[in-house]
Image 1 (tube, one colour):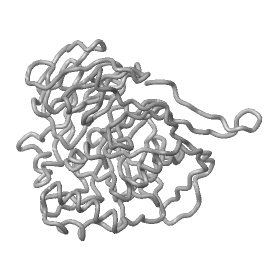
Image 2 (spheres, one colour):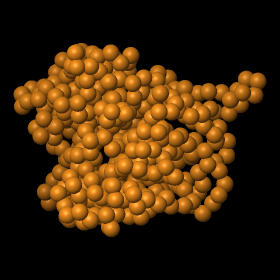
Image 3 (cartoon, rainbow, N blue to C red):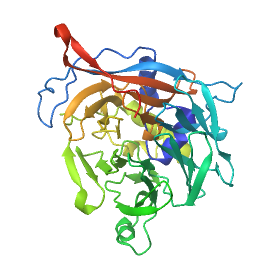
Image 4 (cartoon, rainbow, N blue to C red):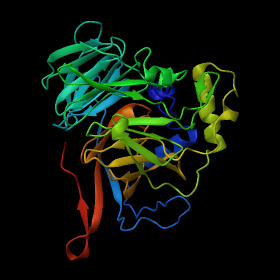
Length: 408
């Protein structure tokens, strides 16, 4: 895992790599995205592969690094988002700003800066609706809205819980996480899990509060000496394009959609027929790094780290609404992506050709995924991958290559 992002991953209780994983990732970075053979993912206890799966692939299109000369070089990037024009927005902590890049990778300037005044921030998270930039500052508890030309349009006060992302749906409703109101059912349900509980508040772009929904922390990771254990199953929460909250526990194959108790539905995802072991080398590396970062006595965590990976790492939705689930496998914690339609039907399997430290380092459109990763010199870069899949026989018996429309 790159040093520039490890502390951020520690904050979220996520370990995405280790010495062994990094060696595997370096090997994969040096190779072009492979042509895929049909993926084979079976139901629990079954062995039959998916029917009709002709393969998907991620093709590296571009790498964006920037330069010191124009102030576009990435220092410590934390969040990435892409607007409807294909412009790329990156929250960078060094120096604090939101850097903007054109679709061709050229630098388009910055938004905001470190500070406490209007349009300034200290701990920003971002989301984009069409070509409108939404910035939520945890420190200031404030939402800022920027026009496409970078003009600050409006701001309003809000809450924020650092452990969950902000989101905006296709209708422009913004979901902001915050603390559950004192004395509420949500606050009572949280108990000692306040850091992973709370409420999502949903706003219009003009700042009008629409409604709210309690966050149920679900499966909580195991803690030792106040540190969440690497590879310990936990609940992951995201949002789909329709504004539904989507959650799942890493030790289960069920994903649930809903906003409010009366609207929830669940889908069962096909899952591997076997568990994948966490090697001793990975456990030592992950435990040792966490111990050093948290200033714990050596050996405090290693023996408590699970010996098997959870069923999955995290999930995300692409611009078509399909669900991408990052899975462990023979190569480690980030082996491959399994792709499902919104109803949970399997669509394909894609090798994980880039490290995915946290979901906040990825942005998805209809036909591309934008990844904040580290290069061979451990420097942060943006890599843009085109999503391609083969949907079956085309003209003259050839497979028809499908690529989504350029941007949402």
